Image (cartoon, rainbow, N blue to C red):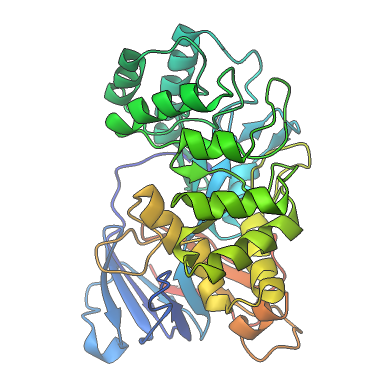
Amino acid sequence: MAQEATTETAGKLVIRNIGLILSGMLERPILDGDAIVAIDGKIAAIGRLKDLDTEGARTIVDANGATLAPGLIDSHVHPVAGDWTPRQSQLNWIDSSMHGGVTTMISAGEVHTPGRARDIVGLKAMAIAAQRAYTNFRPGGVKLHAGAPVIENGMVESDFAELASAGVKLLGEIGLGGVKDGPTGRKMVEWARKYGIQSTIHTGGPSIPGSGLIDKDIVLETDADIVGHINGGHTALPDDQIRCICEGCKRGLELVHNGNERSALFTLRTAREMNELERVILGTDGPAGSGVQPLGILRMVSMLSSLGDIPAEIAFCFATGNTARMRQLDCGLIEVGRAADFVLMDKAQHSPANSLLESVRLGDLPGVGMVIIDGLVRAGRSRNTPPATRIPAVIAG
């Protein structure tokens, strides 16, 4: 359910009887423990229930043997207004994604806004308005980092300083506006970086009117922080160009649901050969012409694990800890002090697998049994995933 952001604290949360804890950390993807304590929306302790201080809990969740992972992060969305998108004239797409385990989203530009401003004064105003709106309004409790201006020719350094001082921390996809060349893109990326604004570049063929081909030369010269949808949004670059990008920079390699799946697997293999899986992050690139994808991140995890020969616990890191570290977020990792954003999952009913991880390796989607954001239970059994075999329950609070 959509709601205003609130300063109400969650109090003490205890989650017990956890069957498996996925950390989001590539270096240690599975943690030892069966319980987590969170206080006022932050993780306070992880371990064995018998060793933790659970007194005074406002909320107690019995995981009933389900797997706990950090809330999933969608690194590439295109919001417009609240929980509505004109791209498909659809309501409640963000709340629906929360039912797919997504607790945080990153805007790659509010480009589908009807009558989107392309003049410099207007694009700055629109970005600041979007940043404010999604700070104050959280559909389904999801934290959507928005206000990502699409840069245009004629912008100067003071424009980026002004945006940063107003709270804007992101640039929309470079290439969706008038800036489509390497030298101009690089200059603006450097200005953005100077003022703490993170950048993403469109990669591949055009996706919407006004966008264009962004090839390896432009990507490498621009040097944005994130190589947006390196597997195309939707049309991918040739394999040799994808390899050049992977080898020619050390920036984030974003794989999206609304892209070329074969190219995503090629990028994954290349990153693994380079021993740089920490660069792989996931997004949906929705809403888009192909619709919205409430289960898009889970589908990417399952696809990359089953077809990319990646252990499921590692594939979940692409959708959690990798993105959190790259995007400098306080969520995405099961670690003391981090945001208490969790998704509790189990293998889907009647899956031939013996465990959640095995089911993902087989290509199945897990069943989401509960979503918790900032220490507050936001959803029980998902209305979108297959029904989970084991379902968590709130037993107090």
